[in-house]
Image (cartoon, rainbow, N blue to C red; front, side):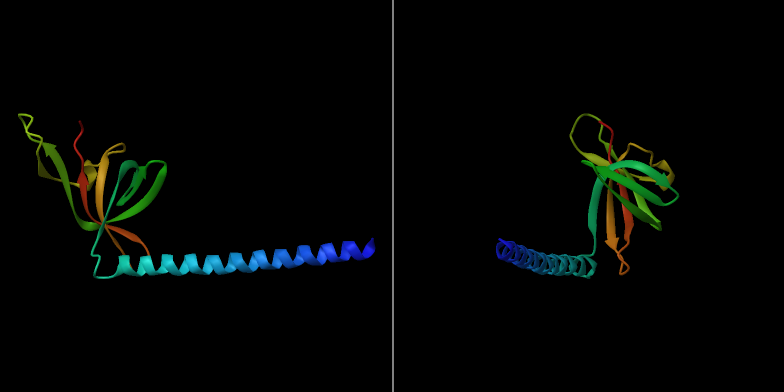
Length: 134
């Protein structure tokens, strides 16, 4: 009976070690693919990416966007262009751009932020579009 328990413990430890080893291998593969994606997003091949969401918080030039339960913080650069998209009169379904200021952005506004991923990994807002209220 004692011999069976020892064999059972050895087998359990062996399976545990195999599980840990496979987990480490999987994590390294995931980290490598994420690292490759970040490298491409920081490259000159992808000059910018667009973030979309509702303004949850504004502190100076930092804006927190929420979208479908997720959020991200964007540092808007000082000379970033800010535009308000305005629907054309007459129901043509088109809009025009009107120059705006960062101070025109309010909590609850829906924004498109053209962002650049900086070498340090920070997300910098290059330009901001305030979407029209419907």
